[in-house]
Length: 337
Image (cartoon, rainbow, N blue to C red; front, side):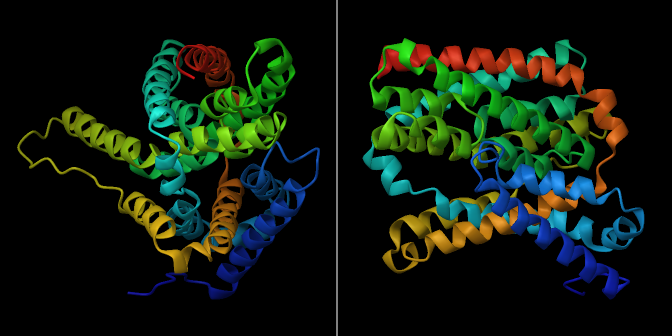
């Protein structure tokens, strides 16, 4: 069995080089003030979509983009686990984690119900719900494998999360002077309500170092829930598929997303082994480069017609739920923190 199962090696290399270039360029663009809120991963996705305007290049690159979107995604999620410092989370107390469990549980349920009421496809509704409720694009990509989502659905969910995350980051920063919160409280609200890690850091940063630290802790508490949510949803999808097929005689198997286990193991290694902790910044940077390649690969395969046709209803539902999660985070901070 070949590690890289490509029929045309030259075209496969073109796909690898193009997605790597998109990831590096996306990372560089994300460092610019006006684009920092959009984020590295979404910019890599957009660059991949732009490449589609050259049909000849796109056709050659697609030799390897399926492999990159699948395997590189899992490798990137595992490496992303090094970003999650369990020592910091535990030393900060369980209050942020308890709040995160409450927020994620309520908001995934609400996002899904609202999307379905708007007649959004079941899988797209789950992806959007997890992206809004957990950690943006990384959550969408992490969950997509567990529920066997199509590339177009993943791209649309990522686009919705990116748009709303940026808009609501600006809204919460604007509201800061009127909330009456301390810097630490404002950071917690940002971490509990905003979509991407970059969004939480940007909003928390407006409240200084204390706000940034509080935002990161609250946000990482939500990130920690990515693995159990992927397991729960994967199990639910397997049960749903089994019930729909009517094959009740076959032994039910729980689909375990092993790369999510790798995510947790990486978190533990980076948190508790001092020698590895020194390399954590490099490993996290590598994670984002690899995930950026996976996002670019998705962009190279996206069906623009599906996005234009299906985008309005899930976006409408996500706007409503983004308002709810911000209100819920405000209530939690006011009551518990």
